[in-house]
Length: 391
Image 1 (tube, rainbow, N blue to C red):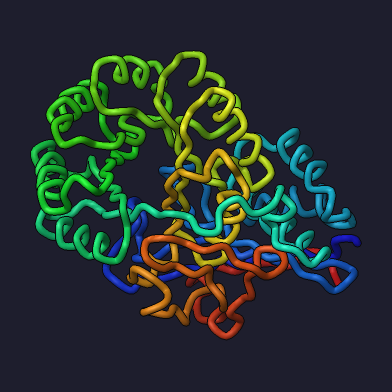
Image 2: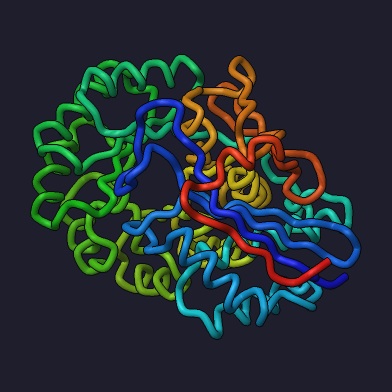
């Protein structure tokens, strides 16, 4: 089996509500849809998930340019897609960073190999560990009463953990949100907070000490991504467990964090780690250090969600860990896909979300079929995709 053609399309999944991702100019999630074709007629698909200049520094344009000019002609065309280790090693050797671009290629390759052998990707990765993944709902910063309203809706829908976004308002506002949500939701719900690295050390120290009495499960990335020494100092002076997200991208970042004893746990995003193959290695390093790993997503479609799900469902170290694999729910403004089926996602058959959990897909590869009828309507305005190679 050989790769004969690669197609990339810039797509935007528009949010059903007025919600806008931090830094976005449009109320939607911009991503890159990739299709890899082979001489056997099989096609592998992948969705990069939402791009973000402030999170990973990648955009639709940068991802597509890298695939068109470098990854596609150098590592994919004419190659056997089953040689995922070889392809990923080549990308890492010659291309620094750009893990989201590498990840979407990794997704499509795994999808192809699973389809080739007629099995889900999680069976390629060692088999199914978890038949359902418990999820934490992510609640954007807002007025306290509005966050409380959404938190109670999520609890009623079965979510047992709430992630509260912080850092976009005043210190008093952040503390009020945590206080009011804890009072309304009770002590049987885990609450953790995420300032996305927008606090400095002194702010984080002040705020977290005031929040300790609200029994937070942990704080995710309180300081800028580069301040690993600050995370270590902060961890020693507050009673709230500290997790790293933006600070823990490359495998070498994990080694530095572990050596400095800087955190109590880690947040993985499969795209941040560079794809499915590298995520398994990423998690193994965390496991060797005894660090709990929770998972997030890049707010993409059901296709991106399924790629992440393959890792979650096949990794024993994550079997009791929460995930935030909620892209489709956020985009389409719903709390499950059973009472509120989603019909206008990139994925024609999304993974099932129900009672605060996500269930693995069962089809070969990523188990997802593209919703071809909506693709012309979601091509990002003013942008064009490309095709390289030929059938």
